Length: 307
Image (spheres, rainbow, N blue to C red):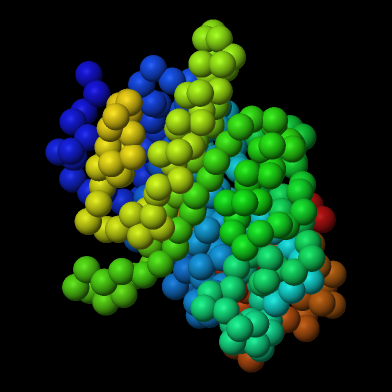
């Protein structure tokens, strides 16, 4: 039996899959609180850059949570703009991480002309990429589209239209909220897709048009409202037709870095270069670009036998 959509308390860091009753439309709703705040506050990102990375994280979770295999979904974009590179990836265990590389001066310059510059302004001419990674022994599957529009939602819709030919709508939102503990980053998103149906084509198209009309009424504030549960939002949108929700998928900020991984990377450098990396305390320091954790490695602890 489906739960009462009006009685479930608000919750964060989850993906809520759903289906519209009697219609060939399925979707997923992302609610990110502490997880995205941890990712965005690990680095001192300008607001516009944090917003861009927050969108990428929400999108990676929305798309990746539908994986039917153990692996990762990677969302990335790169261009010639103030932000050179942004990446977020989701693994099938619900782990999420992200990182941006940017030019602070150029970001500040373009931010003077916009309340909050978006994807096209920050990334410039470039590409949007989604990659499916099923592990080291399999070939990655990758789709590439030009960066168009000021949100990753538009990039994703173009990707699905071009790469999968699946009617898809995406909405993303990022912002800060204060629940008495100071301002914290939040992100949210919703994805709906038309799925195969045995109904007549006209009925399917009518149902998809109706679902999109409801979808268009979503406010960005609703997607990140800490007092509004995902179930309550779905009830607001689809109560006339009804929305059936499925088991939630939890999300968490997670980084794959480890001392063994760092040692493995250092082992690939020539001995002369490793010697130049050694600091005054006889350690090599490496900072993970994702989580900003600093590793201090003793050179004699690096196994170069397999290199």
